[in-house]
Length: 388
Ligand code: FEO
Image (tube, rainbow, N blue to C red; front, side, top):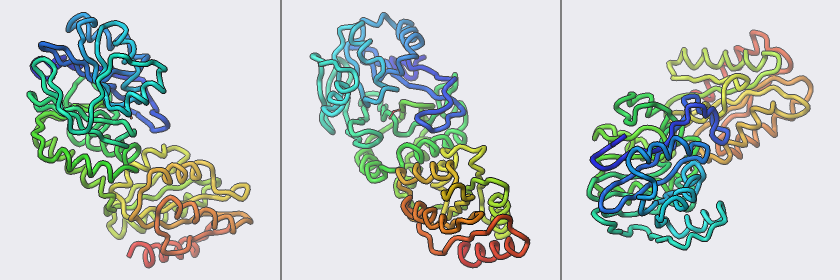
């Protein structure tokens, strides 16, 4: 499908994908690849190896694959580099990538890449009637990540940045609805890009004066309306600053329902105080959905029962995951039910602190089953010490 005169989308739609390295993808995803035709033909990125038939089928509808002259690889992760070697084998193409990307491709595919042009940050490159400019984006999302800008058409190909895991037969954000795409872009940012906010800010500064009319990421829908491009850049700027929002997240895991009762009491208390609250029971909700809400959140409540002297395993997994994602500037509180090992909550509080959250108030814990007085005390403490 042609996205602009002479520029074709030739990527793959992965309708079946349900997780992407542990992140739930209920809408599937796409691996976007773009074919730029002209005096020379240039392919930007490829797709996962198992999507080869769809990918080569789309290229062959434009022209035979051996007419590709150059392959730009913006990122070595295999959802984008999976078929680079196949393209190089089927054509006489030259590989273009950052020096780090060449190294990382070699370590993935154990190939020497004798025909390669490595490009530096900010470098221009004239290829036939096309002019490219390259922007290194270390850690957005890997050390070798790079954005490619096509000067004549004002298209930015930023690879993972500005992407979303969203499968659709349509190509553009405005064709499927800005709100659902922004929601998925936030989930993507929070789960994949959040640890690298400083790098994102540097990229946004580098791109600030670039005239961009299309942002064509490597996952999901393409941004083409001016107002949509402005919104996603503004969102990235906000998310990169890692500032807290206004909402509250209550996330818990329960054995016999006591911790659930405590979560629900806190939920009611927050709603009565007119807060925006999202509640997640980890038995039925995925940790990546919890993380997706954190950019909009100022306070998180973590609840768990105690089993074998430990918090429950899904909660432990969430806290390990959060430790890597480096959210900060947010307040947290812990609660839960225990049988005989109350001291185990000390480890719980330590894990929450290690995940980057402030704990201004000791947690609220109950033995076995909370009665009405205990729940009222929970709500009072929550209201007076945490919601303030
Ligand atoms: Fe879509 Fe970092 O790969």
